[in-house]
Image (cartoon, rainbow, N blue to C red; front, side, top):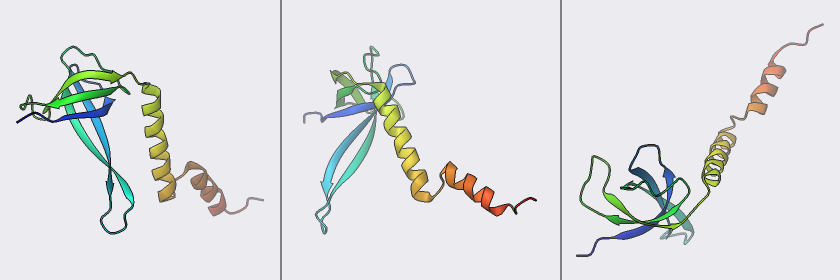
Amino acid sequence: MPRRREIGIVTKANVPKMRRVEIIRLVQHPRYKKYIKHRTICYVHDENDESRVGDQVEIMESRPLSRLKRWRLVRVVARGRAESIEKRKEVEVELQAVSRGETGENEAQAGEASQPPSG
């Protein structure tokens, strides 16, 4: 049986010879027919440390190489920009904070409003 091959984006490259690759796919909701993004995280063995954060890579399934690694790097499809990944993560964190109502501006305004006027 042939091994599965996937294409994803490198999101972490902190450990030598190990990469975290995110595979994003669109799945249609069975009832509402809206397309939803599903994300799969794969830990990949990169023998020659070829890839960097933001690169689009092709990976192939392999035997278990460690506790987490089940994939090997086949090739780097396209070089990416690490800044775009970091910026995207920052924006996601900000959006989550805003959706929870935890923005720094609102907290500062709430602190000022709760203090009685001095005078």
